[in-house]
Image (spheres, protein in one colour):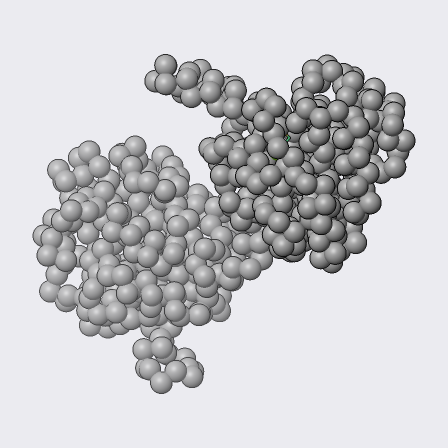
Length: 516
Ligand code: SPV
Ligand code: MG
């Protein structure tokens, strides 16, 4: 069966065919040029390479006249072998060739000796014993009779051709059958029954024909389908009625073997490459203290300058190659309309705590994960600090909190542990988080930013598993979990920043964030 591209070759193999005809007519046609050697031989070779890469069955290339003399033929054979193409068919015409079904009576034939030299040169240069050279007989096409055809076929056989392709443009197979009667199986014979398509294939078998080439049929079928679909969409200016008569996009992905790539990605891309990282943004609350600003949107969607808090967070995550982003949303969640986010609904946001929201998203994360509160504005580098720290659970704590402001937040006590780092900041671990007013006894304020390695994620999942059935879980906040984890011996690393983030909680925060 003919093929003319990597995809069509794959389709041919999937249909069950044992070999592919790299048709000159279909390849040139699919490139939008004529079958007159308008595409250069290397351009055709490039197509063949895609076909060869896409398949495992043998490909017989339609090599036209061999693209020149014996020397060009030698290079062609070398290049085809390098691309795992199984063989080439050359026809005894003059370069540049004309398709056999064109220019009635005006098809000039090559000299027999010159053509035999080309066959010999090809056979001499091939390295793989299995590479085949098929000599194509155009005597019938050019209006010569059986005698000339027999003479040529025998000469080509003696020059070393592995098979003879006998071509005919009659609407019945009588030229072919006359030839077969005289040929007496001296070498395998191939035919192209495009014009005598009404002859049953069993007849060819009876005459001992080795190979029938269906030379252009899937290309012709695809043209018909492309014309139909293009006209229909143009006419209707709508996709509704074509959708069911074409393959779904996922069929393209299947044929392209996306599955293999997805598995390879899992195998070869380290989590550090970023593709394996996820983020969960907890953004279900309204932010009551913001009054009118959150009348119709949740606070994560409040615009600070030109962009919303969420948009800024997503941009920073994307810049760190984090694309798998889950947003747990509740209040006015339909207004969260940024692209490429997975919105996970928490409709009980008014009666549940942060852990309930986290629980909804935790199973959709994979790899290293960043957890952020949806109302935190932060500079991009803060993410790098978290991600660069290899500890399993890392919190970003801001040491530059204001003692004057009266507000309540997650304030942090730390303890220090042995560290190999030169930097004293690398030494701090969480002792306790207390929801309180700022005070001198605190090391800093937790920013609502946390990183979990794969192991850290397992620790959190195990915690959720253990606690989710208990009545107190419903109202539990993340600080409650962190305190319990520390109590049970887990280390929670602190990375310190001094400012460079704002928690947009109330009108004051909003005003200062305006200058951020
Ligand atoms: C081709 O498929 O390009 C062929 C066969 O050479 S034919 O078009 O019948 O000449
Ligand atoms: Mg051809």
